[in-house]
Length: 316
Image 1 (cartoon, rainbow, N blue to C red):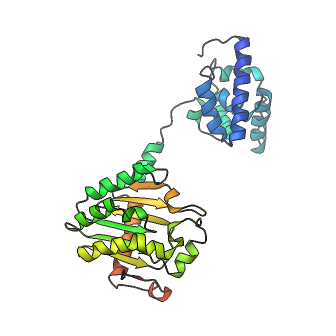
Image 2: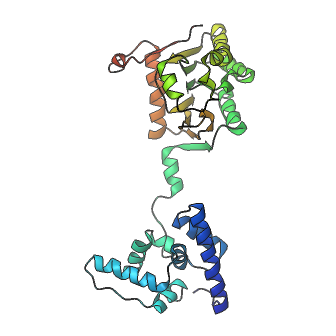
Image 3: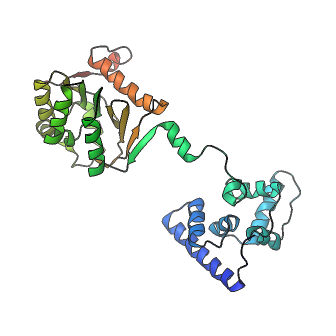
């Protein structure tokens, strides 16, 4: 049973909860997010009452809405009193299972989130584990670049890069890393041809300052340094592809880093997700790399040949 709270404090709680709800509306928060904020800010409030506060309803309104749910199913409405709802909200009594079910329908949530029972379904963390997510970065940053460099430095089997190759690859430190690893394993970089038609389509939705907006500069600052490494190390190869893409893939041994592209955004502003563990999600992206490898080796099965798909070695 919850600790007894004075009427004066109850009025204060209602004002605090109302202010949090209005702030949530201004911020565009969901009802569930507002519930969480109320429970964090006002620890005396129990979950069932927090859901009512987050919706901005009185107990009389809650009773009427519950009646409506019953009537929609052709059932006799319970006509709950405000006092009954008050006792449940304050933890003085527990509603029956049927009432809990209808509260869940009313608030569009689960019993455990209303304070009744425990959620025994797979947790969100389990769901993330099943996708194989090892790490995530909100966008390209020093931290995400250090992660990539460290993975390349520790690679033991393979390094494959695919996407709108960033100038980060052309920096001296990364070039040295690529060259050093190419002495021990295959290193392949698949880059969009800066002069292909797909490049023009892609960069219609990129900001004007995006790197490949100037193809000549892109060749000079990124492709030529990579090509120089390819001339020195036979295990280091650079290929040009001529089709649009909506994400970049960096496969290093058994992990893949995926960067998402977006309209009106630079490529480096996209979130980066790191997958591993031989999950179906990881395999989806690995299959993309294997497909590129087959195309780069001259294996261009239908329907790709008829679509004009090309993956060819970089020549400067």
